[in-house]
Image (cartoon, rainbow, N blue to C red; front, side):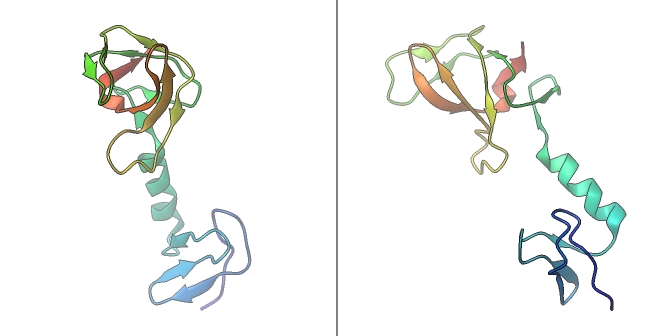
Length: 117
């Protein structure tokens, strides 16, 4: 087998480990099939709102459901506009939007409860 460059960082320091190529610089793993490897990150990297619109860092969103906040006496009302969101794609609990809301502070929201403004 011949070595290749890492498709993510273009490093030459790659090695074959069983059935996957591994890049020790960026920890990217791929099978060597370029078509299959390039399709996977695009599908998982996008965060979508309740209507299916792709969200990006810095977008403004509107809350579509009243949300209770743990430790706070008030809730986030329907129609609350949240500006300058930050996406957290590695969120394991589903809270994939980090933001600040006036009167409540910094918190994380689930994308299924917002729509792009």
